[in-house]
Image 1 (cartoon, rainbow, N blue to C red):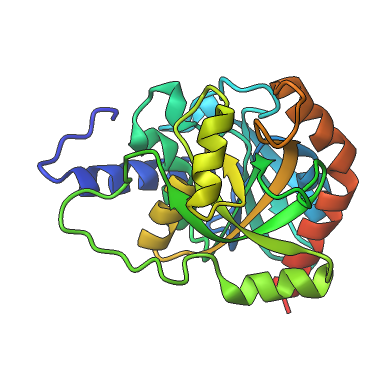
Image 2: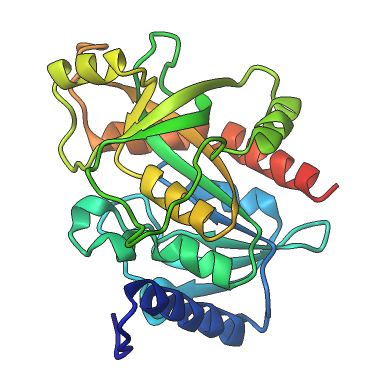
Length: 276
């Protein structure tokens, strides 16, 4: 990663995140950010309701960031001033595990958020629904996850407790904003192919309610970095075998556009209460 050389891979990735955070601080004039949000498929418009976007940086100019290879991700990192005077760092350039850049690239955004001073990491995604009640267009709080990528962002004897990984406090705030919100267990697979009906039946038997290709690895890295983690999924399609419709990324984007106003108001309301 860059020209950094060290015998400790964990120190190397932390140093690389600090370089990215220093670049963001210099480019925006904002020394620290209070919150960070990674906006997944369908969530891109939510940034507009959080507050005033004061700076938009091309992701590829920030050390360690890349343009996303996935349609629906804007390829930028933005600094937003909330009505309460807090700073939110919005990461619109997520690197997915299936892009083949390595796991450090996948979690570089959350490590940079921690290095930029953020105390809270909000992770969003578009995903497949495994419960019949989780219809496309419905936001679902992530209560827990199952990581089926066969990978971890942590190396060496770095033991991190994930018992309450997805903040019960912020989930409670989210339900104050929208009492109709349901919760579910999110399962991350490597992708990029969608699951077969047999695979969906398997992950349902394991206790998953939602299935996608992001978030879990980022959540682990965020917890390891000391961040309070909040995760929320937008169901953009019914998983294979739940519905007889073919799966496509175009459907993901369309459901995101349709649900945009609701999920934008939801995120704005959550951040507003975090400021209380």
